[in-house]
Amino acid sequence: MIRASANDLDYLATRLHARRSRMAEHERLDELCRARSLSELGRAIFSSGESPTTIEFQRRLAQELADEISDCLKHLDAADQDFTEWLLTRFQIENAKILLRSFLNQLPLEMLQPHLIRLPSRIALEATALLTAKSLQEFAAQLPSGYPRSRLQTIIASSRETPTAFILEAALDAGYFQELFARNHQLRSAESEIIRPLISQEANLFQFQLVARGKFHFGIPTETLSPLFISRKHGDWLNAVLSAPDILSAAKSAVGIVFDELSSIGQRAESPAIDISFFETLGWQRYLRLANLTFRRSHMGVGAVAAYFGVRRIEIANLITLSESIRLNIAEREARARMLPRSEWEASHV
Image 1: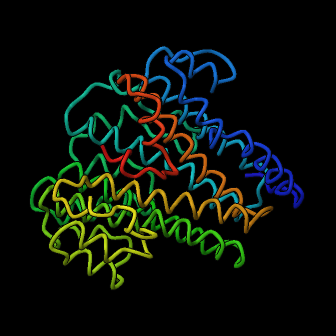
Image 2: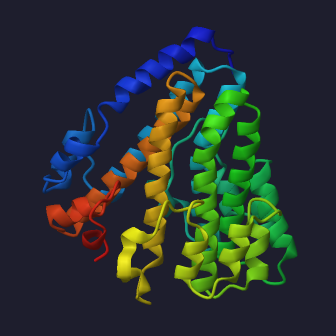
């Protein structure tokens, strides 16, 4: 890539600060929740055209974010480009997961196209070659080199039987975070330290969810889950989560690491019917808080870029929730209560 001038980052950060002021947050999100049709929502969000289906609306949100990340790269110097481009590679990993599930279930490429994100040619996947692979090992070998592929190949090679899609996708995610930490380490020390809590939050939420869904939902043994953690050196909190007898005990072990606190759950958390996704929401609530903090701390550095795209991900998640609420004809107040940041936990946990 072309090396950017020093002033380009100032220009980019200024532009992102301006864009941040127009995000679908607070009062604007409240206003959008009053939309009663997908067409109405689409006209409010997109500058041109409409998305006639929920799938197309959601794909367009993700595509615009991918395009936005790609567009900002030209304003960054080499180290900042390497880190930020890996944020774009998140979409490559998601495309790989879709293709992997399709490979396992022998689905044709034309069924997948509405779900795949268009990426620059340098990181785009060869979908046809992947879907026509003769084996899972061949599928993995045709992915781009790097931690995601190597983690996937290790899991495949060490398994006596074909691993489930849950295990295979977790291997790709673990490799993604491993590389993200490595690229963060290459940044200038001040920006690296500012960004690290944000990426640690997402990585730790992934690891908590790996245990929550793997152990408590699918009944996967801990010895099968352990190789999927990002680092072989598990922290005390992660060992406690692994050995916890139930999900609430596991969540209590992750307070201050994955969750800010659990008191907002109240007595509702004592119920065995509490949903795993509720804890995931708590984790993303903390992620949003850290993204806002990072955005303020970095201000005009690459930390502001990383934080901005973190907040954008939450914005898109909220808009996807809203589109689903419209599809299901969910009332405005309940739809708003399902979004981040949440203040009405009882209303949202229905």
